[in-house]
Image 1 (cartoon, rainbow, N blue to C red):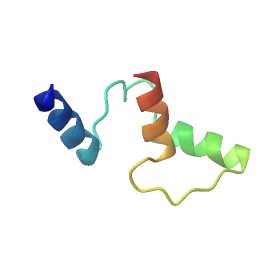
Image 2: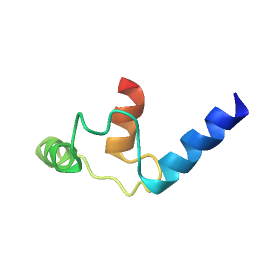
Image 3: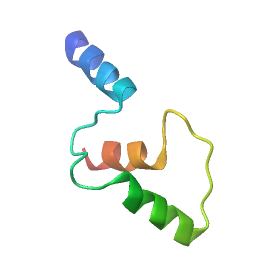
Image 4: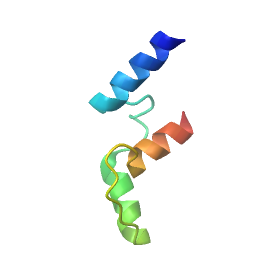
Length: 55
């Protein structure tokens, strides 16, 4: 279990997330712009949050 968490954390830090082929950064940015949502998040960006939720 610890190895799985470590691998997941490394992938998260490198920007690789499971299911990342389902939605693009541009799609999320466009949706956030249309909704008037602004963020300064570094780790839990809107894309990271969505992909984590879907996973």
